[in-house]
Length: 418
Image (cartoon, rainbow, N blue to C red; front, side, top):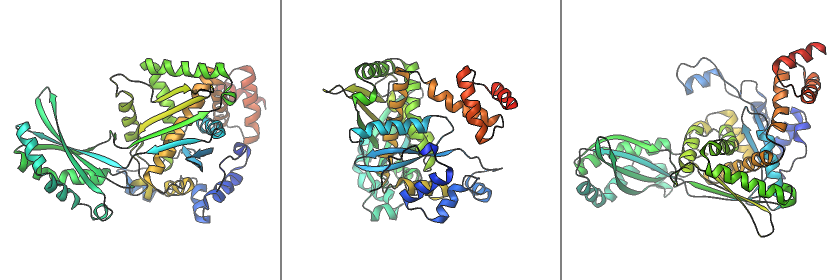
């Protein structure tokens, strides 16, 4: 089994990093070339077929987080993000979690929820009629996907609920669909649209919206890790991290920033492997408010030995087949680097990365503050923006850190002096 605890990857050249990743994931020479491309692996012709009115492509940094052991398996984790310190923080969090065995993560089956809004109907009567015609509706839905049906997946359940709105009561019919290793948006929408005329006929009502819900509460992923007390920094640091969590769990202003830090990890992986990051973040934020108020997505406590224990539970609608994951060359290579075989395994990796990132962020906040490491990396960006060469950047960064004057103007001044 490959070992993800790669020492000082940041000190190696790009060529050396690529060789390490290629060896870990058994990449071909063509796949290495895709990672080496300066256009992010996607040509304008391909981009022009993906979106409307295309005028170019837009690249973001792609890095590798190390040290991850998840359910006993080692991973190196591709992350796409523009924010300094995130990849380093995730790697550091994974390294500390590794001492006690890494992350234990589970993910539910890939059940997608489709909704059909039914208006102008006697709701109690309609619900009974729909329940009596359940098998007929499911059969029609499943006729729209031979692939899922052959796999024993597809539409599994129908439920009804009544909601109150300013315009009156509405009936919402929901399809529960096992979409396998796909994210499942297209097949869910197709099934909803296919059965809506039948639901209209059965209920006597008028179907309006027919669309999936991105609130994927039937696709929950749960991660847990134990962070050794000594590696965290001792009893006081453990206690301070728990106090920091309690702040986030009881104050919405802090909770939003706290949860954003979790998303720094989760969404960076989502970007790398071509997932719908907007859907993931929307669902996570809704889940954070499930109790009736917006709270921390993660939980932090300590065990009987005083070790720090972190857990994270989020809805994750992800897939490894279909969508951009099978179209974008870099997303395809990143999926191979990750080595995931199912959508559930991908959800496990993304959740573990979010928890690792959260650990490092709140530990920094509870000790030295977030800016020490973050600003050093930010200073490198400023030095590069000022036009410094690779050799000049380290000199300029060190000087700005010593002076505690980290700005683009100061970087330019120091570059002129050099």
